[in-house]
Image (spheres, rainbow, N blue to C red):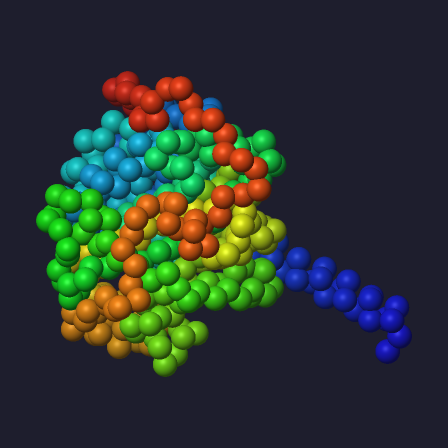
Amino acid sequence: MSAESGQTRSRLHRAWIAYRLRWKRRELLWRAIRTGRRLSPLSDRTASIRKDDVLLFASIRNEVARLPEFLAHYRRLGVQHFLIVDNDSDDGSTGFLLQQSDLSLWRSRYSYRTSRFGMDWVGALLLRYGHDHWCVTVDADELLVYPEWDRRNLADLTGRLDRQGVHGMGALMLDLYPRAPLGQADAAEDASVTERLPWFDAGPYRTVIAQPKGNRIVRGGVRERAFFVSEPDRAPTLNKLPLIRWHWRYVYVNSTHSLLPARLNDLYDGPGDTRLSGVLLHSKFLPEIVVKSEEELWRRQHFADPDSFVDYHQAITDAPILWCRDSLLYMGWKQLVELGLMGVGEQPPIAPNDVETSLPPTEAKTMTENE
């Protein structure tokens, strides 16, 4: 084969891949549009959203124990409005969320798994409300931290990204766990997540690039060590893209692990990436994990192939001890930077705002439903 012929075939192959990815993106956008019509608004306060507000999107089910700290953390970061889908909670989550004046709430009673693990629901809200906003998309058990997050809010962070022409920021999902067996915690229920689950694995973590989207897959950490040591390629994916300046043409493909258009997957390469990045402090292993894993054995909602993860959930119900002599005690964001789990970027940090970083009071208004 001549060099010219090979180049022609390569161009045709790239064009074919680009064509397939465009149609995949359109398919997922149409799914979001259809799904959005099935969401039931319970409290629609979206008329209060302003042009430059940072928005947070999530789907939840039975997370009333996590929600107070979750909302307080992101309000401190500067989220101005929360857009939440409640997947038919029965633990008081719905009532709690309805009381929040800076939050709009929808309900879905459809299957979490067949809605692409909630991403069709969240995608519908991103499509409708997220365009041209900086959007945080996370689960209720994920608390985003980044360099100097305790002094610089999301307005500072996204302003820096805007000035650099960067459209998003990646993060490592860092599993926290207790020294005690699962089903217990290292502090009382009213303590913070990092007091109740103060330990983590510093590594090893590894990154591979998956084609054709070019999305990164980071694996490793405590869940691989404890539950997938003999099959590491089945371990959970730990990289996410939780902060994006949204455009209506964007769509999450696999949770927040990957995006289309595919170029957005180049925003983060995993641990060791020196670009500005964050960490999602993951509170999966709070004491209720044992009961939730028992429930998942019959609900079968959290994996595309739930049968292949029966052993994983069964192992959690046995309440193992995840702590080992290599476990590290969480000390804050500087520690994560030193370990290479979080990047600070090339430019020096910007000066913090002179104003407080907490959320300003939200006016209480009676809104009409937009459906």
